[in-house]
Amino acid sequence: MAKKLLIDLDRLRDNRPGESSDQLRPDGVLSEYPNKDGRKTIRELALFRYTCRRCEDAPCIAACPADALDKDDEGMIKRSTNLCIACKSCVVICPFGTMMSDFFEHHRTPENYFDLNDPDEILKFIDNNPEGAVQWVEMEEDPSKDIYQLNDRVLIKEKEWDSIKKLNQGE
Ligand code: SF4
Ligand code: SF4
Image (tube, protein in one colour):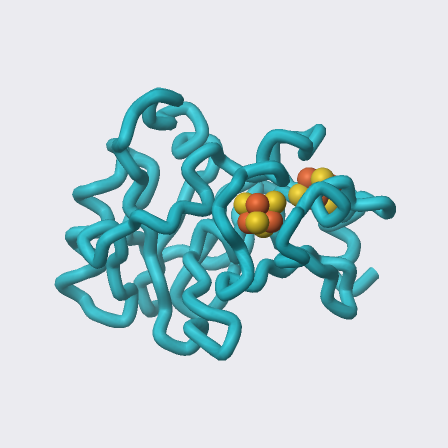
């Protein structure tokens, strides 16, 4: 069985850097996701897929002064990294705390990003995250344990919102 990264979003939330801190969480990227819309981190992909409740009126979209947020065909929020000005209005207005406070930062440096296609970078990514938040495991998706497959190399542990669960399972 091929090993996968298991990222526990609850543990990341519990270990957030202080609000006034300049400390940024490390974030992982996969080379297939940087696209014309900019770099998509693993955390952003996971939170919008599994944590966001896909509000019908989407206050985050209404609050964005840069028209950087939109919904895709499945109703999943997507962010244009080219348009986003990192004002965090969407972070503040989201009633469910979907996004973490350091979610959109423009002052990230390459040291904050780890290429999850590179085995050495994977180990550094694990080491730079809070203990137990990211693990390198032989495991498959297991919804009974709140573990979902984001792609063939990444599993996400998150208490998925029920309606999203049905959407992701094609119900
Ligand atoms: S307000 Fe929050 S939960 Fe609602 S769609 Fe936006 S990010 Fe998702
Ligand atoms: S942080 Fe970016 S996506 Fe969020 S409201 Fe500001 S410009 Fe829009």
